[in-house]
Length: 358
Image (cartoon, rainbow, N blue to C red; front, side):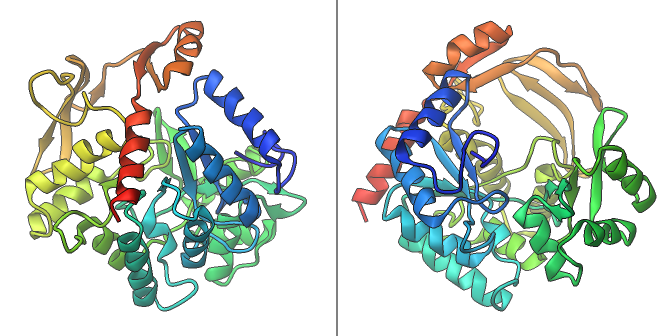
Protein backbone atom coordinates (compact mmCIF):
# COMPACT_ATOMS: atom_id res chain seq x y z
CA UNK A 1 0.00 0.00 0.00
CA UNK A 2 1.27 3.42 -0.91
CA UNK A 3 0.07 7.01 -0.78
CA UNK A 4 -0.52 8.36 -4.28
CA UNK A 5 -0.68 4.86 -5.71
CA UNK A 6 -3.71 3.30 -4.05
CA UNK A 7 -4.16 5.46 -0.94
CA UNK A 8 -5.24 9.10 -0.82
CA UNK A 9 -3.34 10.09 2.33
CA UNK A 10 -0.92 8.86 4.99
CA UNK A 11 -3.83 8.48 7.41
CA UNK A 12 -6.54 6.61 5.47
CA UNK A 13 -9.80 5.57 7.06
CA UNK A 14 -10.73 1.95 7.72
CA UNK A 15 -13.27 2.22 4.90
CA UNK A 16 -10.57 3.24 2.41
CA UNK A 17 -8.20 0.53 3.65
CA UNK A 18 -10.93 -2.10 3.28
CA UNK A 19 -11.62 -1.02 -0.29
CA UNK A 20 -7.94 -1.20 -1.24
CA UNK A 21 -7.51 -4.61 0.42
CA UNK A 22 -10.50 -6.08 -1.41
CA UNK A 23 -9.38 -4.67 -4.74
CA UNK A 24 -5.88 -6.12 -4.32
CA UNK A 25 -7.12 -9.58 -3.36
CA UNK A 26 -9.56 -9.67 -6.27
CA UNK A 27 -6.70 -8.83 -8.64
CA UNK A 28 -4.63 -11.75 -7.38
CA UNK A 29 -2.59 -10.31 -4.52
CA UNK A 30 -1.14 -12.82 -2.06
CA UNK A 31 -1.88 -10.41 0.76
CA UNK A 32 -1.03 -6.88 1.81
CA UNK A 33 2.42 -5.39 2.32
CA UNK A 34 2.98 -1.97 3.83
CA UNK A 35 6.23 -0.39 2.65
CA UNK A 36 6.42 1.75 5.77
CA UNK A 37 10.14 2.41 5.68
CA UNK A 38 9.92 3.59 2.08
CA UNK A 39 6.45 5.13 1.78
CA UNK A 40 5.08 5.54 5.32
CA UNK A 41 1.66 5.90 6.86
CA UNK A 42 1.02 7.43 10.25
CA UNK A 43 1.54 5.09 13.22
CA UNK A 44 -2.23 5.14 13.81
CA UNK A 45 -3.00 4.15 10.21
CA UNK A 46 -0.33 1.43 10.29
CA UNK A 47 -1.93 -0.09 13.38
CA UNK A 48 -5.40 0.30 11.88
CA UNK A 49 -4.34 -1.56 8.73
CA UNK A 50 -2.53 -4.31 10.62
CA UNK A 51 -5.45 -5.07 12.93
CA UNK A 52 -7.93 -4.86 10.04
CA UNK A 53 -5.99 -7.54 8.14
CA UNK A 54 -5.84 -9.70 11.27
CA UNK A 55 -9.63 -9.49 11.70
CA UNK A 56 -10.26 -10.31 8.04
CA UNK A 57 -7.68 -13.15 7.93
CA UNK A 58 -5.67 -11.33 5.26
CA UNK A 59 -1.93 -12.03 5.08
CA UNK A 60 -0.16 -8.86 6.24
CA UNK A 61 3.53 -8.05 5.94
CA UNK A 62 5.25 -4.80 6.82
CA UNK A 63 8.56 -3.09 6.24
CA UNK A 64 8.67 -1.21 9.55
CA UNK A 65 8.59 2.56 9.49
CA UNK A 66 6.04 5.36 9.72
CA UNK A 67 5.73 9.12 9.43
CA UNK A 68 7.13 9.27 12.97
CA UNK A 69 9.95 6.71 12.83
CA UNK A 70 12.06 5.42 9.97
CA UNK A 71 13.23 2.00 8.79
CA UNK A 72 15.25 1.32 11.92
CA UNK A 73 15.01 -0.19 15.39
CA UNK A 74 12.61 2.56 16.48
CA UNK A 75 10.35 1.73 13.54
CA UNK A 76 10.44 -1.93 14.59
CA UNK A 77 9.54 -1.02 18.18
CA UNK A 78 6.70 1.17 16.96
CA UNK A 79 5.00 -1.33 14.63
CA UNK A 80 5.03 -3.97 17.35
CA UNK A 81 3.58 -1.47 19.80
CA UNK A 82 0.71 -0.37 17.53
CA UNK A 83 -0.06 -4.01 16.63
CA UNK A 84 -1.14 -4.57 20.25
CA UNK A 85 -0.52 -8.30 20.00
CA UNK A 86 -2.09 -8.87 16.58
CA UNK A 87 -0.04 -11.36 14.51
CA UNK A 88 1.79 -10.25 11.36
CA UNK A 89 4.87 -10.74 9.19
CA UNK A 90 7.73 -8.35 10.02
CA UNK A 91 10.01 -8.23 7.00
CA UNK A 92 13.83 -8.48 6.89
CA UNK A 93 14.79 -8.05 10.53
CA UNK A 94 18.42 -7.24 9.73
CA UNK A 95 17.34 -4.00 8.02
CA UNK A 96 16.42 -2.50 11.40
CA UNK A 97 19.85 -3.20 12.89
CA UNK A 98 22.36 -1.07 11.00
CA UNK A 99 23.62 1.00 13.91
CA UNK A 100 21.86 4.10 12.58
CA UNK A 101 20.00 4.98 15.81
CA UNK A 102 21.94 3.23 18.59
CA UNK A 103 25.15 1.22 18.77
CA UNK A 104 24.72 -1.81 16.51
CA UNK A 105 25.02 -4.33 19.35
CA UNK A 106 22.30 -2.53 21.32
CA UNK A 107 19.96 -2.57 18.32
CA UNK A 108 20.53 -6.31 17.89
CA UNK A 109 19.79 -6.93 21.58
CA UNK A 110 16.58 -4.90 21.36
CA UNK A 111 15.40 -6.72 18.22
CA UNK A 112 16.13 -10.03 19.95
CA UNK A 113 14.10 -9.02 22.99
CA UNK A 114 11.15 -7.93 20.87
CA UNK A 115 11.06 -11.14 18.84
CA UNK A 116 11.37 -13.31 21.93
CA UNK A 117 8.51 -11.47 23.62
CA UNK A 118 6.30 -11.59 20.52
CA UNK A 119 6.16 -15.14 19.08
CA UNK A 120 3.08 -14.15 17.08
CA UNK A 121 5.38 -12.32 14.66
CA UNK A 122 6.76 -14.18 11.63
CA UNK A 123 10.10 -12.87 10.43
CA UNK A 124 13.00 -13.39 8.05
CA UNK A 125 16.38 -11.85 7.29
CA UNK A 126 18.60 -11.68 4.26
CA UNK A 127 22.28 -12.44 3.77
CA UNK A 128 23.42 -9.73 1.36
CA UNK A 129 25.39 -6.61 2.31
CA UNK A 130 23.29 -4.47 -0.04
CA UNK A 131 19.74 -3.25 0.31
CA UNK A 132 17.29 -2.29 -2.41
CA UNK A 133 15.29 0.90 -2.80
CA UNK A 134 14.09 3.42 -5.35
CA UNK A 135 16.27 6.01 -7.04
CA UNK A 136 13.24 8.03 -8.10
CA UNK A 137 13.34 11.71 -7.17
CA UNK A 138 10.39 14.10 -7.06
CA UNK A 139 11.01 17.85 -6.92
CA UNK A 140 14.68 17.21 -6.26
CA UNK A 141 14.14 14.82 -3.31
CA UNK A 142 14.40 10.99 -3.28
CA UNK A 143 10.89 9.61 -2.97
CA UNK A 144 11.84 6.66 -0.74
CA UNK A 145 12.50 7.27 2.94
CA UNK A 146 15.04 4.45 2.95
CA UNK A 147 16.97 6.09 0.12
CA UNK A 148 17.08 9.36 2.03
CA UNK A 149 18.21 7.64 5.23
CA UNK A 150 21.00 5.76 3.44
CA UNK A 151 22.29 9.02 2.00
CA UNK A 152 22.15 10.86 5.32
CA UNK A 153 23.80 8.03 7.27
CA UNK A 154 26.83 8.20 5.00
CA UNK A 155 27.25 11.95 4.81
CA UNK A 156 25.33 12.73 1.61
CA UNK A 157 22.53 15.23 1.19
CA UNK A 158 19.06 13.70 1.08
CA UNK A 159 18.48 15.26 -2.32
CA UNK A 160 18.69 14.41 -6.01
CA UNK A 161 22.12 16.03 -6.12
CA UNK A 162 23.18 13.99 -3.10
CA UNK A 163 22.03 10.78 -4.75
CA UNK A 164 23.83 11.72 -7.96
CA UNK A 165 27.05 12.23 -6.02
CA UNK A 166 26.57 8.89 -4.22
CA UNK A 167 26.17 7.14 -7.59
CA UNK A 168 29.25 8.85 -9.00
CA UNK A 169 31.31 7.84 -5.96
CA UNK A 170 30.10 4.23 -6.03
CA UNK A 171 28.14 4.27 -2.77
CA UNK A 172 24.75 4.10 -4.48
CA UNK A 173 24.73 1.32 -7.07
CA UNK A 174 22.12 1.49 -9.82
CA UNK A 175 20.36 -1.80 -10.64
CA UNK A 176 20.58 -2.43 -14.40
CA UNK A 177 19.54 -5.32 -16.62
CA UNK A 178 22.44 -6.84 -18.55
CA UNK A 179 21.97 -10.02 -20.56
CA UNK A 180 18.61 -10.63 -18.94
CA UNK A 181 20.08 -10.43 -15.43
CA UNK A 182 19.87 -7.57 -12.92
CA UNK A 183 23.35 -6.40 -11.89
CA UNK A 184 24.95 -3.54 -9.98
CA UNK A 185 26.23 -1.13 -12.61
CA UNK A 186 29.59 0.62 -12.38
CA UNK A 187 29.33 4.33 -11.44
CA UNK A 188 29.57 5.57 -15.02
CA UNK A 189 26.98 3.18 -16.46
CA UNK A 190 24.79 3.57 -13.41
CA UNK A 191 24.66 7.34 -13.68
CA UNK A 192 23.76 7.11 -17.37
CA UNK A 193 20.97 4.62 -16.63
CA UNK A 194 19.62 6.67 -13.71
CA UNK A 195 19.47 9.79 -15.86
CA UNK A 196 18.03 7.94 -18.87
CA UNK A 197 15.19 6.65 -16.66
CA UNK A 198 14.56 10.15 -15.24
CA UNK A 199 15.80 8.76 -11.87
CA UNK A 200 13.02 6.13 -11.73
CA UNK A 201 15.22 3.06 -11.36
CA UNK A 202 16.22 0.89 -8.35
CA UNK A 203 19.42 1.54 -6.43
CA UNK A 204 21.28 -0.38 -3.73
CA UNK A 205 23.50 0.71 -0.87
CA UNK A 206 26.05 -1.43 1.06
CA UNK A 207 24.40 -0.74 4.42
CA UNK A 208 23.90 -4.17 6.02
CA UNK A 209 26.59 -4.93 8.63
CA UNK A 210 28.03 -8.45 8.67
CA UNK A 211 27.32 -8.78 12.40
CA UNK A 212 23.54 -8.41 12.17
CA UNK A 213 23.35 -10.59 9.05
CA UNK A 214 25.32 -13.39 10.73
CA UNK A 215 23.50 -13.05 14.05
CA UNK A 216 19.96 -13.25 12.70
CA UNK A 217 20.90 -16.08 10.34
CA UNK A 218 22.03 -18.28 13.23
CA UNK A 219 20.55 -17.08 16.55
CA UNK A 220 18.22 -19.49 18.35
CA UNK A 221 15.62 -19.07 21.06
CA UNK A 222 15.94 -20.77 24.47
CA UNK A 223 13.75 -23.64 23.18
CA UNK A 224 16.16 -24.35 20.31
CA UNK A 225 14.07 -22.87 17.50
CA UNK A 226 15.45 -20.09 15.33
CA UNK A 227 14.87 -16.53 16.50
CA UNK A 228 14.26 -15.45 12.89
CA UNK A 229 12.16 -17.96 11.00
CA UNK A 230 13.75 -18.06 7.56
CA UNK A 231 16.00 -16.48 4.94
CA UNK A 232 14.59 -14.12 2.34
CA UNK A 233 15.62 -12.62 -0.97
CA UNK A 234 14.02 -10.88 -3.91
CA UNK A 235 14.16 -13.61 -6.53
CA UNK A 236 16.60 -11.68 -8.69
CA UNK A 237 14.63 -8.45 -8.77
CA UNK A 238 17.41 -6.93 -6.69
CA UNK A 239 20.89 -8.41 -7.30
CA UNK A 240 21.22 -9.88 -3.82
CA UNK A 241 19.88 -13.38 -4.42
CA UNK A 242 22.69 -14.93 -2.36
CA UNK A 243 20.89 -17.44 -0.15
CA UNK A 244 22.83 -20.34 -1.66
CA UNK A 245 26.22 -18.64 -1.90
CA UNK A 246 26.25 -17.06 1.55
CA UNK A 247 24.14 -19.79 3.15
CA UNK A 248 26.61 -22.49 2.15
CA UNK A 249 29.37 -20.27 3.57
CA UNK A 250 27.57 -20.44 6.93
CA UNK A 251 27.46 -24.22 6.64
CA UNK A 252 31.15 -24.45 5.79
CA UNK A 253 31.94 -22.14 8.70
CA UNK A 254 29.99 -24.43 11.04
CA UNK A 255 27.40 -21.82 11.99
CA UNK A 256 24.59 -23.90 10.45
CA UNK A 257 24.23 -27.59 9.74
CA UNK A 258 23.20 -28.60 6.20
CA UNK A 259 19.80 -29.54 7.59
CA UNK A 260 19.39 -26.14 9.24
CA UNK A 261 20.31 -24.39 6.00
CA UNK A 262 17.61 -26.36 4.16
CA UNK A 263 15.13 -25.59 6.95
CA UNK A 264 15.68 -21.83 6.86
CA UNK A 265 15.99 -21.50 3.10
CA UNK A 266 13.19 -23.86 2.03
CA UNK A 267 10.95 -25.61 4.55
CA UNK A 268 10.31 -22.82 7.05
CA UNK A 269 9.82 -20.23 4.32
CA UNK A 270 7.25 -22.42 2.54
CA UNK A 271 5.32 -23.12 5.75
CA UNK A 272 5.17 -19.44 6.64
CA UNK A 273 3.69 -18.71 3.21
CA UNK A 274 1.01 -21.38 3.49
CA UNK A 275 2.58 -23.76 0.97
CA UNK A 276 2.68 -27.15 2.75
CA UNK A 277 3.49 -29.02 -0.47
CA UNK A 278 6.66 -26.96 -0.94
CA UNK A 279 10.01 -26.74 0.81
CA UNK A 280 10.58 -30.42 1.52
CA UNK A 281 11.54 -33.52 -0.43
CA UNK A 282 9.12 -36.18 0.75
CA UNK A 283 6.16 -38.26 -0.40
CA UNK A 284 3.24 -36.12 -1.48
CA UNK A 285 5.27 -32.95 -1.92
CA UNK A 286 5.76 -31.11 -5.19
CA UNK A 287 8.88 -32.26 -7.03
CA UNK A 288 10.75 -29.01 -6.38
CA UNK A 289 14.47 -29.73 -6.25
CA UNK A 290 17.55 -27.53 -6.47
CA UNK A 291 20.92 -29.22 -6.96
CA UNK A 292 23.83 -27.27 -5.45
CA UNK A 293 27.54 -27.54 -6.16
CA UNK A 294 28.91 -27.12 -2.59
CA UNK A 295 32.39 -26.18 -3.79
CA UNK A 296 31.26 -23.48 -6.22
CA UNK A 297 28.37 -22.62 -3.86
CA UNK A 298 26.08 -22.24 -6.84
CA UNK A 299 23.01 -24.07 -8.16
CA UNK A 300 23.62 -26.38 -11.08
CA UNK A 301 20.04 -27.50 -11.69
CA UNK A 302 16.57 -26.70 -10.46
CA UNK A 303 13.19 -28.36 -11.01
CA UNK A 304 9.71 -27.04 -10.25
CA UNK A 305 6.95 -29.64 -9.99
CA UNK A 306 9.31 -31.99 -11.80
CA UNK A 307 9.94 -29.64 -14.71
CA UNK A 308 13.48 -28.35 -15.32
CA UNK A 309 13.83 -24.60 -14.98
CA UNK A 310 17.64 -24.43 -14.67
CA UNK A 311 20.26 -26.78 -16.12
CA UNK A 312 23.99 -26.04 -16.24
CA UNK A 313 23.46 -22.33 -15.74
CA UNK A 314 20.80 -21.99 -18.45
CA UNK A 315 17.23 -20.98 -17.70
CA UNK A 316 14.66 -23.23 -19.36
CA UNK A 317 11.42 -22.05 -17.83
CA UNK A 318 8.55 -20.23 -19.47
CA UNK A 319 5.17 -18.96 -18.36
CA UNK A 320 4.37 -18.63 -14.69
CA UNK A 321 2.13 -19.51 -11.78
CA UNK A 322 0.23 -17.09 -9.57
CA UNK A 323 0.40 -17.97 -5.87
CA UNK A 324 -2.53 -16.45 -4.01
CA UNK A 325 -5.61 -17.09 -1.93
CA UNK A 326 -8.84 -18.41 -3.43
CA UNK A 327 -9.89 -14.93 -4.53
CA UNK A 328 -6.89 -14.81 -6.86
CA UNK A 329 -7.95 -17.81 -8.93
CA UNK A 330 -9.98 -15.78 -11.44
CA UNK A 331 -7.15 -13.25 -11.83
CA UNK A 332 -4.78 -16.09 -12.74
CA UNK A 333 -7.22 -17.47 -15.30
CA UNK A 334 -7.69 -14.06 -16.91
CA UNK A 335 -3.91 -13.59 -17.15
CA UNK A 336 -3.37 -17.05 -18.63
CA UNK A 337 -1.29 -18.16 -15.66
CA UNK A 338 -1.26 -21.32 -13.64
CA UNK A 339 -2.68 -21.06 -10.12
CA UNK A 340 -1.38 -22.34 -6.80
CA UNK A 341 -3.58 -21.92 -3.74
CA UNK A 342 -1.75 -20.53 -0.73
CA UNK A 343 -3.28 -21.69 2.55
CA UNK A 344 -2.85 -18.34 4.25
CA UNK A 345 -5.70 -19.06 6.67
CA UNK A 346 -3.63 -21.82 8.28
CA UNK A 347 -0.69 -19.42 8.60
CA UNK A 348 -2.87 -16.90 10.39
CA UNK A 349 -4.32 -19.58 12.68
CA UNK A 350 -0.81 -20.65 13.66
CA UNK A 351 0.12 -17.06 14.46
CA UNK A 352 -2.96 -16.67 16.64
CA UNK A 353 -2.16 -19.92 18.46
CA UNK A 354 1.31 -18.57 19.21
CA UNK A 355 -0.28 -15.46 20.67
CA UNK A 356 -2.66 -17.46 22.85
CA UNK A 357 0.09 -19.78 24.11
CA UNK A 358 2.32 -16.96 25.37
